[in-house]
Image (cartoon, rainbow, N blue to C red; front, top):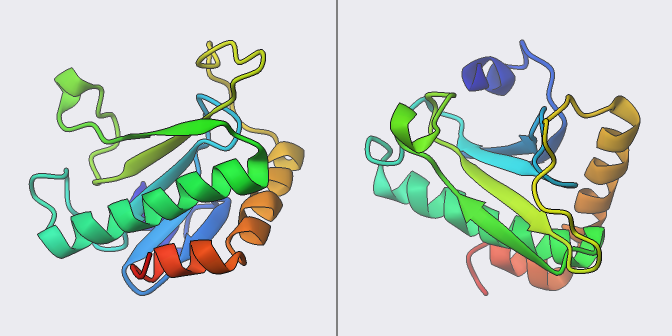
Length: 145
């Protein structure tokens, strides 16, 4: 599935992309702005992924977490990766979740999870992309801050 997103054969709401990593919105978000970061090359889980790509995915995840605070108004975020079915992994392509959290009136995870609407996805992608223009966040993505 993620390989098809990387190849452009499956639609996604892309937030960020470089030569090694792609970041896009979760189709069935847990919270407003829930995003996924994955290497473009296929590796089943964090154990099988080369260290440089694990590091790169977490560098981008950290920056997107900051972008969720700056651009989406989140008060915090969770960074999560699952390895194996027993840990909740259902897509067997290594990826990292950024799950923004909101302090005031945050009801916790959205359950049941439903597919994100096009209108909401456009709004979120625009907010992320605007936040990614921030100098500090650019430095974070570059691994400089």
